[in-house]
Image (cartoon, rainbow, N blue to C red):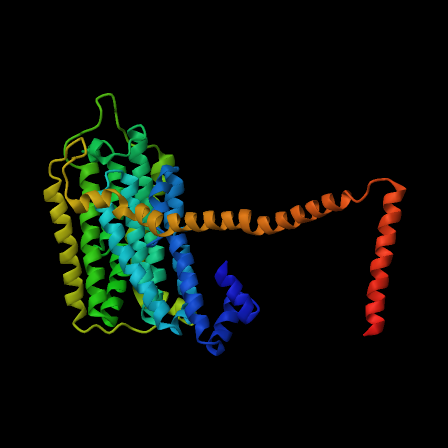
Length: 438
């Protein structure tokens, strides 16, 4: 809302066409202020640091709704907002760097949170936060990454909604159980769910030729083209993705059955499996279709512009490195979860405890944002009560007191009024004499 107010104040409208045309001639503070305000809006909309806390709480809702909002609508809208506002960020290095820093923190933060959760939907929620971090990194890089941000948004829509529906299928088979420690060996009784979920799993890992290989690897390539440090952090995120997604996959579909004896998991019906099959096909082929012939770049270039990434080393090295890092993370997860306890371990590392508590994001928001906000609102309430209302009440009390004192002059006796008139005339005559003598 604040950014809209600034746009109306400066430009007299809020359309993208108007902003893109006029932003170049605006004062230097306008791109900075608009960029930061739009970033704040995108953080709230797309669950990026520090406004990410709501996303995991939203997992209490219906799973098909989670699949929809995470994949194609609400949560990814912030990415579109930043990409569509590229002309604003191009004129403010500080604002674009702020987007990059927030994106990198969110990318790694979501991955670490997802690696410690036992709730299958919250693992996927952390994954969404991390993958949107990738998109925001690409958006922050400017014309070299804007196309890839939207590219990954689309491919992510296929494989993430696919995995959410797969999680819903598993939950349906186990009476709404969300704890992965009570899953295990489900591939034997839910083969179709296993295969479709596996397509999404391989896509998010970036295994060729699945969709994520083309979109996420393109973002990492653009990151290395701009900065080795940024590229290294996105590569680290790829390794963490390999770890937490393999952890989810192994705990759910492999190992020994850990579900209750009275549970009899079975494959879901066509109403649930057909959408999963369609999304699995998108997880496999969407990347190839959009990447081949560079038709996606040609489609978006008139809006976003496009600069071909130039790596400081051969592209083959990048692909080998990414696949190696991803498989290293996956291998660690396979080894670590070759045997899974049905109960959550109490003695864990400090990092795991922090990740289970969402890296204390709620406490951070409470101490940095909510408590100061409460204190400010309480102070304003006291000022309103004792300050503003006090002044108004004082005026009323003064008028009441004055009227009470004046009321005592109204005795109802004629002699009192006659005396008051006589005294008044004497006073007035005295004043008149003084004036005439002057």
